[in-house]
Length: 540
Image (cartoon, rainbow, N blue to C red; front, side):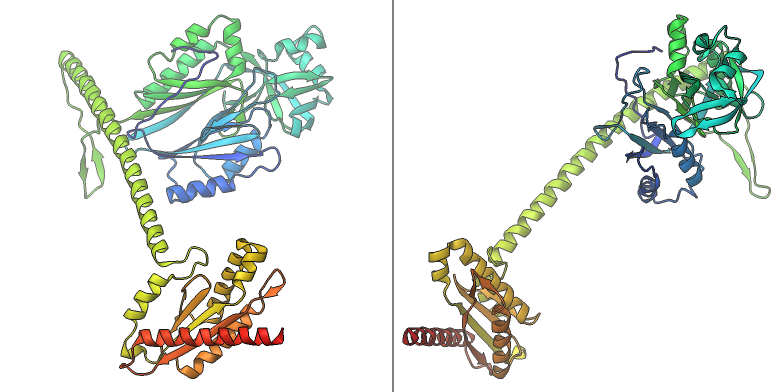
């Protein structure tokens, strides 16, 4: 019931009114405005196309940057995309027209628009009030020449705009004309007394700049202000008589109306009109409702149907009939009072249940987070238990367990390759351990690429690698080793090629010990490595 300045206000809706809500931000609207990403996100979230949404169950709120001058284009795009109503307002900066902001998701944005799509509960309803305090006069102005992108009218009635306007309002001079801007704006008249107001903001030479767009060739009527208090009171009473009890109002009220109320010392009276309702809102540079308007008040109303009427349905005729019981005035008053008390109890219980629900949701979120974190830690521990951190290959522990598990007759013949990287100590001593680690990672990658998908590759020691090959004959192993050598020869560390000594052995029957086969492969590898060292010494 009060109009506040330098204040922040908030309104909360419980689930009896709003079943669900989604917020989207559209940025850089002055550069390239498109609602498609936001609307696609809405459709995915609610799992429903805008073309099939029930317009009695969905309603949108739109908050615009106040100086982008993109309101008309934004509303046009919304109107082309859906029949769902979007109601809202444009942010202001006390008529400085320098920089304005909209807020969402914990951030403030400029050159942006915020779209909010709400799904109304099945037992709740919403409605819209659009009210202004003007009447149309007989004087017509035709915009012959306009600059749409800046909302400037250059000519009215084939004359400089300010001259034609001054004559229409009866101003004593052109200099006096701006004094009439708020009391005598112009309006696009649609039907009887239904108008979209367009208020001039400033005179620029002989041009007039407006809050809202006036298209070239558009005919507008000169308007004259009436009583804001009486008009708003009447609009509320008319809506209540049709809509019923209003439980919440979001009011987008034009800044020019607020300024007029201040000038006429009517601020307190205007606020008192809403003292019976939970009301929130702000003064805007323009209001959105089936287009862009200003110097009006556009309100979004909500109510919750606490008592659903009893009715009888005749299945043969599908006619619903409602029998209203007859009571004496005293009984009726008592019923109303009891119903009010019951409604209050229901609201308190509903509030309590909402608090419990919120607490449970928070607990579930925390529990889910803890489970996910614990699962993640367990997976990390499990991974580290069986993998080598440096190369990402399996480690020795895993290989030793797998070789026992897979040592079965159906996997025969089983071959094992052991490989030892030559020159790792030289790399570590002369170029540092980082280069040595690089060499080991390249060796690991080369072995994996050259081996088959079912082969098990592991890091056995510091510079040793082992490969378990199931159902692989002794003769096939050499071909695989040659592939590994070829793959690794393509890699270099500080211009030094990678060289590996390999040994291998094969288990052909179940009587052989797999660990002996592993040892044979290791001994074979050391023999090859020793041979390479002798050849290197002889060449020196």
